Image (cartoon, rainbow, N blue to C red; front, side):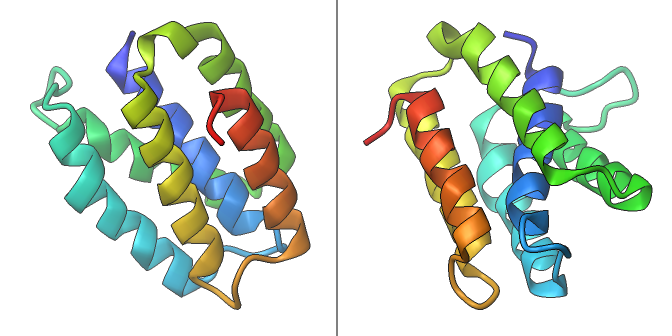
Length: 130
């Protein structure tokens, strides 16, 4: 699996969940940055040609999506396509972590709203997590 692509797609997932209610809140963005530093960076230590940890591509992608006001479902569907194509390369533990991180993002602002709940349910099915 291409980890740089994985981290870009993870940025799309987090963006979609945070944006599902119409706006990425500062608390959601702050939590995502914390997740990148505490969880994703520890997950895989590869870096790009400039020495930047690939985990930061999650943040770069999320910021790009915010700047271009991409529809959350478009970003979510991109992650789903990636996960479906690479599911055998994503360990059950990592699948669970992705779900838990996405749930944490959804809960970080006014709890899990209906639109976020729908995405999380679809994410569970895609990742094969109960």
